Image 1 (cartoon, rainbow, N blue to C red):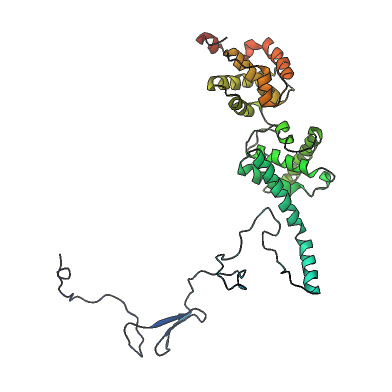
Image 2 (spheres, rainbow, N blue to C red; image 1 turned 180 degrees about the horizontal axis):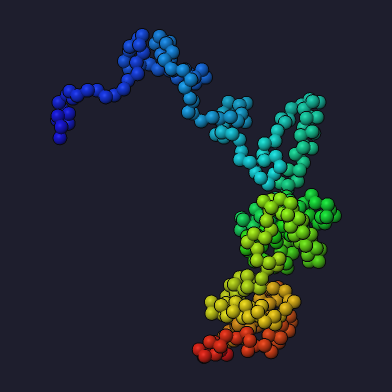
Length: 330
């Protein structure tokens, strides 16, 4: 403990730097920072002591609450939204009576019509995705796709619901979220045939735009193929059916062998997924009827039985020999 701690006065030099006015020499000094002029002045005599100081305070630059004399917590306005052309920087005309104001409002509404149309479409896309419990990245991808294609001439006359559903399907593939044509088509009142046509046109438009501007929207990013694979659907279907991990892994193995051998070539991914699940459940003695699988997958039990007959003839190529050696094979 030093002498200062014992209550003795400190006799060393005072290293504190104190800026005082050379004219007044009052202590403590009375400084006033005038940020509007960039000066520091003495509050007692008015002597300017420093020039061109930098204002380090927050720069509030929006004026939405000026009429109410309130504080606006926003510094530079709302964040820009790349899904809109104006990026939230458009002008808002106040609703005041008068001929000039009405004309200004009418002109402004015309300029904002495109963003209003996009806002309505984005709200509908979000509603459809929420109803099907699709993640946020799928919604963002679908909105981006819709913005790129909705004004294209090749889609004129097509149902807006079909275009939105096609955007959601491509958004699912972009985010590696496996969904079938039937599942996405069920979100709308559009026929599956029309929906399929819109998907083909949308894919073509995106590919053409990607060739012109590669950084615009790369449809091939994180996408394995132009359609959903059966392997991507098996885990979700097995989860809905309450099957064990053993049956799920067996179904994935059979699906891989089906793809290698081409046993069910030409059939849709959901049909292949439903059939291999039925075979895996049969192999391991799980009581699971085709009708129950059809209820969860949307594939008819007749289609499952027909595809199963084709797979059964090639069962030696599809079954893992280790299952037989382990004694688990039914």
